[in-house]
Length: 184
Ligand code: SF4
Image (tube, rainbow, N blue to C red; front, top):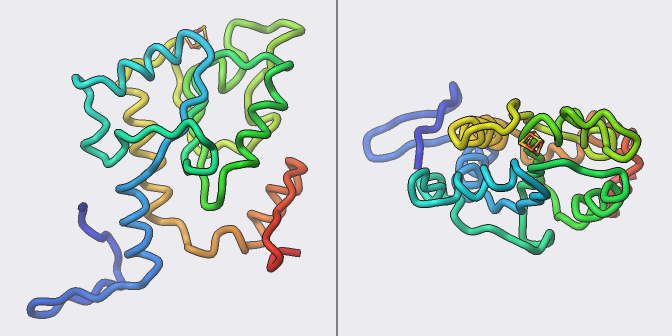
């Protein structure tokens, strides 16, 4: 487990106090369960990233989930056609909160070289994205850098992010229904 970088940490002899938010953020960031939504060449780079040479288990991320209900990081790697868009959105909606999205490569982030009638010009047209990884394709080191940026977000994020007005407005923008009865 990493260090808690927090000005509210109180160190004493044999103990350390911090806020619940920070402690849970630290635990969450070291146990992210990714769901790979890989459609083309960037997916191959992601497979390389998961191999032993790069060893994602160093970050508590060797367990991939192919069920949205047991995943909290959606990794979109590859070209997304407009026809596939609603399926990607459905997968995102099926993931439980808290959840994050990593867009890997030029195609997922902007349509890449495929400026055509059939390709979605960036997944952020249908779902919110937390971190973008540039490249065509990005190297595994770049994907790991993207994952590290996701970890930073997870660590810092408040436990109650989903109840914030900003988050609710973002979901409304994407026409994503929030099912929690507490959220109006
Ligand atoms: S960004 Fe490049 S490598 Fe990645 S899916 Fe698109 S064409 Fe393939």
